[in-house]
Length: 262
Image 1 (tube, rainbow, N blue to C red):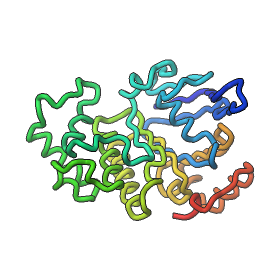
Image 2: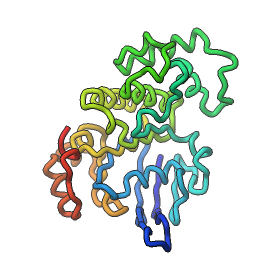
Image 3: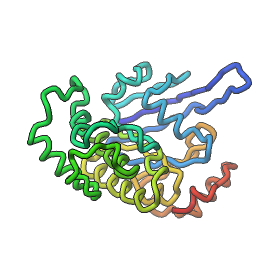
Image 4: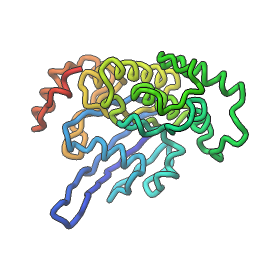
């Protein structure tokens, strides 16, 4: 479903601020893979995710989604293949619009994005049932303004919006990092349920080792713009936090408390 083949990215080339963030990175995701990605600061995790999403062009290499070479596609043209949830809960929803209006716009992805024809009763019934999976009581607040929701509620709603029209690829960029532990756990549980229900191919960046071990069928560790460790299946299930700390140490990366503690 995703083929990242030998991509390079250098920011501010030829200046004192030159930084090579990706160094010939290659990564392959089969359909239905749920991959968690960890790594120290500057490892290239977010740069890799942004490259896949088309936020900026890569210097070399190719990116293919479901057999389509998207390497030269602009971000807005690539968006039809991708659902994305950002770290900031304020991103991804329209604060001045109602919950049902946000969901209606998300459902019209790939069509003319307008609410001119209104939201039908059938749509509202559908959204009511969909919101139940979040277990946050939002199904009974369809007409509430999104700006009145908590950060966790908005992030959970963004997750639902990103997957309402089944994407080829779901990108989660530390989507629980800004939430308190209890809310983060709820959003992660909802993530797991939605991904498993729809069999979504998912790439989730996290700074938390416990979350990386607890979720997904595959774990990837990055360092200095490349993949240094890739475990799946039974190998991933047997991994411990100490194993990951040892891998960090072997790579020369520092491990901060937030990466270890839940």
